[in-house]
Structure formats: C-alpha cells, structure tokens
Image 1 (cartoon, rainbow, N blue to C red):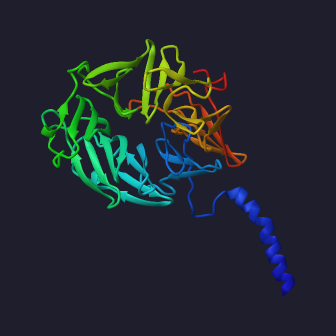
Image 2 (cartoon, helix red, strand yellow; image 1 turned 90 degrees about the horizontal axis):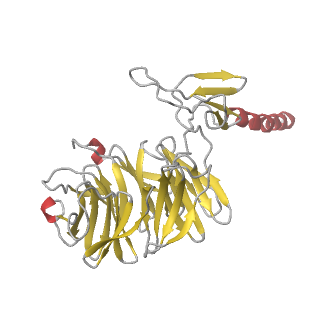
Length: 388
C-alpha cells in the first residue's frame, strides 16, 4: 500500500506540470486574452494603475503585475475613466455605458444606477475627480456625484445653459468653487450651494475676461491657480484675466494632466511625431519625453518620484528614468475579428474586419498567433509582406 501511494504521488507530480503547461488553466475555468497594449490612462494609487478599453492592470513597487477585467474582478467592459479614492483606498472605474465599479484590493462593488436608469443621453464618463470622499464623474450628460463611503450616487448635475444635458469633460475645485470644463465653455458654482442640481446656479465664464467662447476640454489646479485646456492651448486665470500659458504651432495636445506643481501635456504633430512635455507653472518646458517605437499616441502621464509613467494608445505603459521599461501584459495586440485556425499546437487568428456593408476598414493588424502561453503578431508594422 505505501508503495502504491508513493507511486501515485510521484506520477501526479510528474504529470501536473505538464498538465499546467499544456492547459494553462483548469478545465471549466476561464482566463482572459485581452489587448493590454492600447493604454489611455495612468494614475497613482496604492499602485500604478493603467487602463485599456477592456481591462486594467497595476504595477507595484516590486514591478509585480496584476490584471483586472470582467473575467476576474470587474463587472463590465469598455472602460472610460479611472480615479483613486485615497480615503477609502479604492479604485473608481467608470464605463462608457454609465456603469460604475469600486475596486478595493480584489473586491468589487458595483453601482449600476446610471446604467439601468431611463436617462436618455450620453452616459459615457470622461473624467473622475475625487475630493473628500466623493467622486465627481464628468459624463456626456453632466456630472454624477458618488458618495464613496455609502457607495451610492448622491446627485446628478445637469448644467446646460437652458437646463439641457451637455457633455462635461472634467471637474475641479478651487477657492470654494467647483469648475467644470464643458461643451458650452467653462462653468463654475459656489461649492457651499446646496442645489447644484439646478443649472441656474452655474455661471459660464467663457466669452469674458480673455477666455473665448466654445468648448473647454480640461480643467485643473496647479500652483494654486486655475488652468484650462482650450483646443491646443493652455490658459490660466491671472487674478480676473485669462492668459495663455502655453501654445506651440504644429503641436496638438491629445491630453493634459494637471498636478500640484507641474502640467503634463501629451502631444503629436502633423509629421506623426509624439512626445510628452512637462511644464512648470510659468509655462517653461522642464522635461521632454519622446521615444520612437514606444511613444506614438501618448494619452496620459504622471511623475512618481524620479520616474515618469506614460500611457500610450499603441505603445502600452512605459516607465522613463535613466532607462525605459515597458509594461504590456501579454495578449493579442488588438481585437481578432476574423477567423481562427488551430495548427501544430498554435492558434492563429485573423484581425481583418469589414463594416455592415461588407466594405474593408483598412485594418492592418494582420495575423495573431498563440503558442506556449504567448501571443505574437505578423502585420503591416513588422512584416513587409503585409503591406496593405
């Protein structure tokens, strides 16, 4: 009996690694094969968090990586924005359909009120601003105020000039006022007003004191001053007059990030070059981050100590110090919309796609392959044969 028992244990130890290598996961369970290359946001919480359309991944101090998606921890896909609640030590996730998740560790609380509501309009979240235990989620229909301790929506701010829904792109707070970057311009309201749901309590600052009319795409506070992004310029409020802090011909701002002492601008130019520049509060460029092959469509950046983190929509998440590190959890480089084949222990997936009229969509992502738990791709970008 002991001999048989020993033989069974020995056989199990021999076969188990082969089973794990061959299968990857136990029968009856799922795992994700998602694109982690198209990052569009990076924030600092208890870890560094980066978001893609369908997933989030984090990097801790030891460079250990964790993934969060609908297969594992999240309740939905199509992520629109993320934010960090320092009081509750939790990640806030806003989706394109109005759904909200609060992720603390590996525990998720879902707030589906907007998703399930009969609200007619654009529910997509554009930005998450967190202050004193509340999250202010700027959306296509207005601003959703979330009580993070009670895990519920407190109220909705609809602030169109006529009480109509308008897209709000960001919210910030300064000197006892809330500021909102909207499609109708820059709006502000007294923070101690108990009825910010009423659009009449919001005043439009655009069109006066040097701030032109039209859309304001971002708002933030730096060095105790209010800054806004309008088109491809950054302006600041100097006493009661708006002045241009930064603009540069031929460089387009794809995203601005405002921090207590610096402003980060993600940029592209008409020649296809990409970079991230760091401005001080006087508009002087103190650092430029650019690297061909890594940065081609930067969407967000932050500084953490001596490290600069950049989320690029095609280059994944990169960390810039004296050297450059890239963090892209292995997965297919984009959605595979075509056919699948299985040959010699390898899965091949075609990335081609057409619209409802059966017209091609200039998709050059080529063919993906999955073997030995690793995804690779042959496409226009790395194989001359796939030239069209």
